[in-house]
Image (cartoon, rainbow, N blue to C red; front, side, top):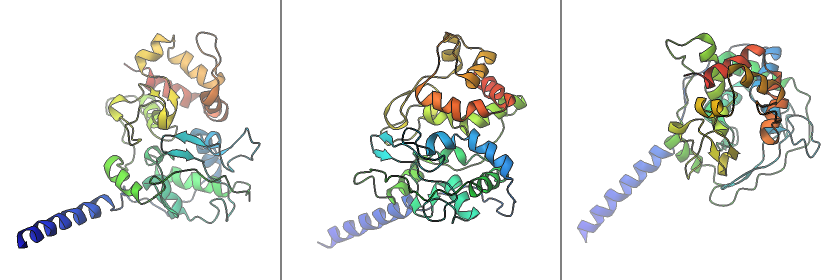
Length: 291
């Protein structure tokens, strides 16, 4: 009997240690929260990050950034929230520190954030960009109408479980340029992995909804991130793209085969990439088409 008590005691200690480990906060490098944000630069980041496309339900006629259409996944339907400056149903009452924590560490005032919000990508942004984006969102017209509630069934509606997910799959960090590569290549890589989060849509995910980083940009068959084609260099070349035509497609939506991109990518082009600078469209084409 005593022997079994010892065994049970050891298992309890191991289980407790595992729980403590997998429920510990996941945080990256600290940010400089004394920086003053620039609204104009922040407005460009809103377009760069695709905020309007995700957080606006255009089909329902909702105002920009007041809440998006539901993202259907195997884990439930996630509705992008109101991120206008309204203090009650938007993020107007958030501090820069809270905003930074959400963008960088996947932790909001309400608890752990679901990875349907691409904080895995936004964590790569610079401290100044976080301050700029915060300033721009705080300067938006407040919309007092709350977004619809997400429909997330048990047990996925337990936010604390996201602590375990983050400990398994999330490594917050800042972007580090690749040595020996051009400035344009590194800018494009930063955009694709960072604020533009191309990798989040165009990469397959495992059964727990985590990106398979070893298959980055090879396409998503569906599920958590939705269906998206491969955008590797070989796939793009096979579709008739070169650097110039890819940059042009991101501007006007016309493909080399004289088709027009619609659906989610059409929205991304209309609300995001068409509003980028020529240099940023060229940079992401430089990266994606690189040898």
